Image 1 (tube, rainbow, N blue to C red):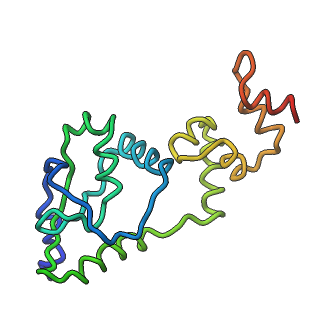
Image 2 (cartoon, rainbow, N blue to C red):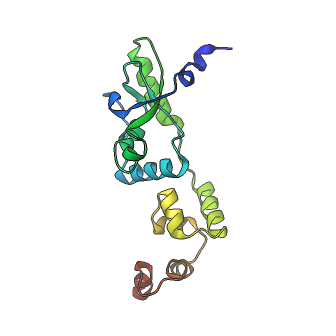
Length: 175
């Protein structure tokens, strides 16, 4: 058994967010919309992935988690602290860069077929378009594209139970 594989998790601790600082080489960028989704994910699921740092608290992986932790509502809910694990590459800057890139690339991408099945299952379970959109970070149009509904069925679902005119109702009247 290789103890070095367990070392990062054995260093897990909550530290003041201000102790951490970004590296100067991360090529990963996230839209503001996806930062909101990340915040929602943390609010819904709790903090599931610690931020990976070097011994000097330079971030190897987790820059975007660190970013949203500095904004409300997470800032006050977390008390200004974030979970970290320390990875010590013993001064090997290339290993730090490799760690950043491999963490980013290993997360993969979502395939269309499985995403369609997930959205359809959620709709079949009675989840609303609004809830699906909020929890998955999708606009209503994205939920529609991933559903098997016709345009009219989808617009009816969007306006169901709504009194007056909603955006979807106005779109339906125009179309």
